[in-house]
Length: 134
Image 1: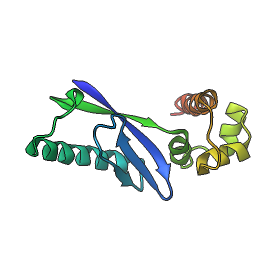
Image 2: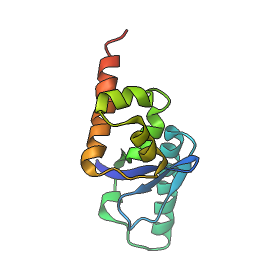
Image 3: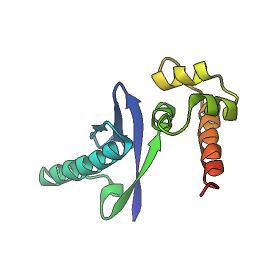
Image 4: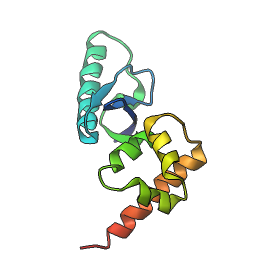
């Protein structure tokens, strides 16, 4: 079973998702991360059916069984974790100023890969510590 990479970003008021393979022109939105994940899978199946009916070539990774692997942009990660982690806690964990995190969350600034990694690692570190509570 192959994996299909789906990129997820936060666009004003919605999460947006699209396959990393740009040969498949399919997008979906949703108010929640769970909603956009369900919507893009449904949209992909519908789009692939249409391609097949129209006799269009289907990329190899979509033939047979596949599962989605969601990759969230930094902006999507920050928006999603806003429901669970304060920016102050994330700033303390990552050493990145709250204001800078807010700029990344709104799209005013775009973090470089090293900064994206610090943010992702910080979120995961907080989650690991919280997992000890039961």
